[in-house]
Length: 384
Image 1 (cartoon, one colour):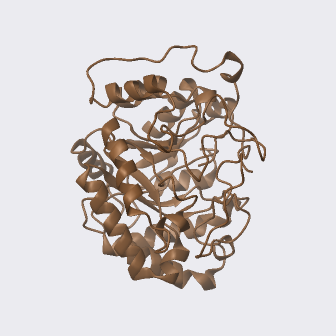
Image 2 (cartoon, one colour; image 1 turned 45 degrees about the vertical axis):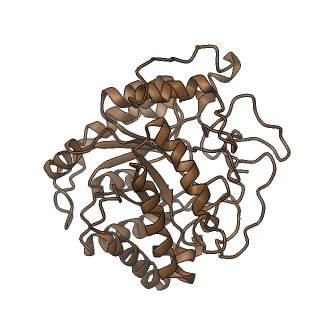
């Protein structure tokens, strides 16, 4: 959900000693051969990160009083119409803590809705992103701040628990309970155990919990692969450890075409399937007409950020200010809340690359104003 370092670092990463990353000694870790065999049996995984437009964070999405099955079904129907066959969704520890059976029941209901539309789900269990500046808590969520993206996004679990090993027994129970309940459910395509470890100024404090999450999840022997994706400096020890532990490689990339190709070369060196689990930043050149051909031709699974513009307000750009008007160029998201596309030509392009339509409809090069094409991806520039 965050952005990567500027492009010069990527060049340096290509020289990084990735050959020193050895994962075969990890207990229960899938051998590369098994991972590649699994991936060969999958379709091209193409979809989006999803929250219904009525939820501004994953607490609001999953707690009983605000779980909105009708909106979920309607909006996943739009994903299906685009040709998407998978979505990535965030769960939150505090919802499980308050109502573990209820969370699992609602998640199963979500899986049913998605599966009926031909969509498989990648759940995220832990997450260091916290742009609200407060601890996650169940109950009525504060309204989003006008003009700011993800202004009420909270971490999972509350950040104070991440480095507090006295809190880990409950986190262990959470991971094992959720993964165990769906360990043999084909509606779950991949487990993304931890989103952006080290975000929210956590740094390496998150690495021990990330490593423990792999151990806890593997203890219940899921049939699906496990992953945690680098999102910042791919050469950092924590990022290398993420790739070392993962059955399949995932990563985040909001760069333009050159930066994305560089990251794919790094990830591809590990000899395992690769998924880009966050992308789409129109003003930096991360756009559907440039990225979908790359992903499709190399069978890179891909999940753009956002489907329907709603309470997350992620159509606003990183660095926007409170009260800003809707930007001329949306950063993320595809549809307005009423189902009207942000750009109908863009929707036609998506449908062409996913095979829904046989008529190519590339976007004109002038869609993004020239002055916005070269904005660099800067670390932490999307915090409210």
